[in-house]
Length: 274
Image 1 (cartoon, one colour):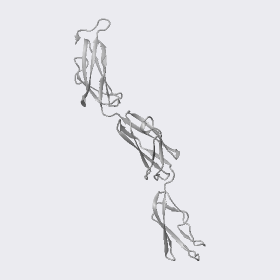
Image 2 (tube, rainbow, N blue to C red):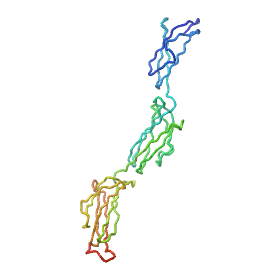
Image 3 (tube, rainbow, N blue to C red):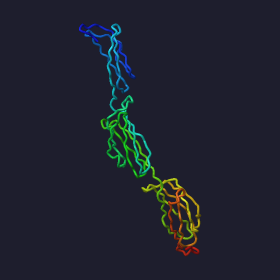
Image 4 (cartoon, helix red, strand yellow):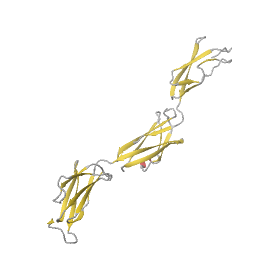
C-alpha cells in the first residue's frame, strides 16, 4: 500500500489456505515508505492460496496468490507385497517431507533387489502424489528383502519384502524305488508348479496301490513345505508293484512309481507279485 506520499496504514491479512501461520501479527502498520511485509509459512503443501490485504480505514484491499511446495524428502515408504510366481507384481513407493506432504518429481532407486532381476538397478520418479510404482515378474518362490533410497539423499531409505508364492500345481513326481522284503519302505511324491516351485498343503492320493502292503487305494497325505507327501509301506512278498498317485484336487496331475521288492541277503521274503 502507499501512494506518492507514503502514509501509515493499518493492514490486515487473511487467506483461504490451510494451516497458514504468520511471523508476527497478521494485522500490521505500513512503514514510512507505505510498505508492509507479511511473512507466512505453511506445513501443508498447497497451490493457489489467495492472500487478501485490507486497509480498513481507507477501505482498500488487494490480493496475491502463493504456492507452498513440499519440502525436501524426509520419509520413504515402500509397501510389502505378496505375488504369485510368473505373475506381474507392482510395488507402491511413497515419498514425503517432514510434514507428511507428498514429494513429487524425486527419484527413488532400488539399491538391493535381492535377486529379482526386473528390479536390479531400477530407478523411478515420484508423481504429483509423491508416489511411484515398480513392476516386476519373478518365477522363483521365496521372500525377497529389498532396499530403497531417495536418489537425492541416501539417508532417506527403507526396506520392504516381496513374497513370491508358488503358482498353481503343474506336475507330480514319484521316483521308482527298490525295497527289501520284510522291511519298511517309503514312497515320496513331490508336487511343483510350472517353474519348479514346491507346493505345500495339497492332498496327494494313492489311486491304485497294486496290492502293496501298508498302503491302500484312497490313502492321502498332505505335501509339506518341500512339496513332498510320504507314504510308508511294508511288503513281505518280492515282486514288482506299480503304484499310482494323483493330486486329489486335479485328476490330470498324476504319476506312477514302480516298487521293486527284493529278497534280503539272508534269503527272507515270501511269494511274489508280478
